[in-house]
Image 1 (cartoon, one colour):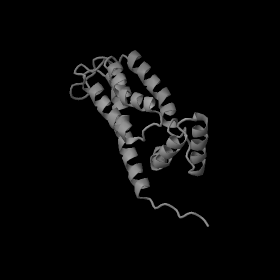
Image 2 (cartoon, helix red, strand yellow):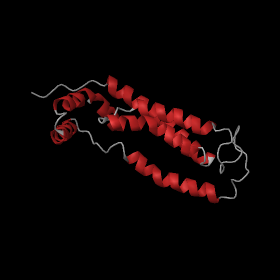
Image 3 (cartoon, rainbow, N blue to C red):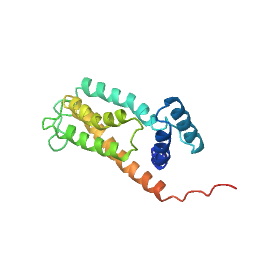
Image 4 (cartoon, rainbow, N blue to C red):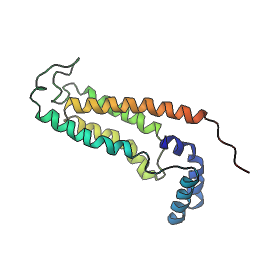
Length: 167
């Protein structure tokens, strides 16, 4: 929801960036005022990631330590959820799903941060080539659900009528 609101006020944010491009302090102040008037929490998008980190870490250690997963066939090409993907399909699916997720979210104000957000799927994909298949599968499913959720929220807020200003 927070990201959809940010996407809706992107033109206003770009105008603020243009107006105050020589003065970062005033640009930040104007951006915070815009967030306040539009009732946007700038950290609203961080909570889901923070909630998932303990699950991610716990799943990593469960897959590493669990004897039951070793050599237990699962589905298709994945023959062991505790080992890396032998065909490297899951890391590629992760990169694609993460790229789509990144494209659905509004672009960051800072151009350097925007570039970093585009390179992040590739960096994580390289890392995920050695991670257990179960962990990468968790992240791929999470990304696919996030894509669906973001699409629904964006459609809902894009078609939602804006309230008339009070007189």
